[in-house]
Image (cartoon, rainbow, N blue to C red):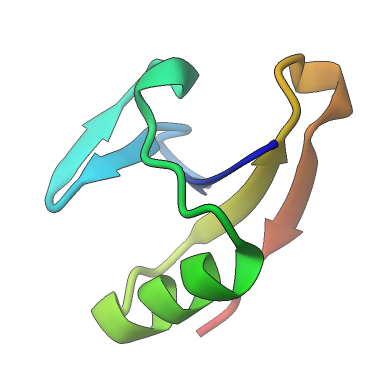
Length: 67
């Protein structure tokens, strides 16, 4: 399982500081939900979902994070 961030409006995945990608396999893996949520709060990213990605999008679990 990978823990990644996705922008709700653009549907792009977080890759690195100020870098976003349309390709899920290029997204940064936060390796844990708490680490991902802490990053969103620290950087103050609006409109971001945390995805638990299991390799096939039909099994993804999406968590909506509100700031």
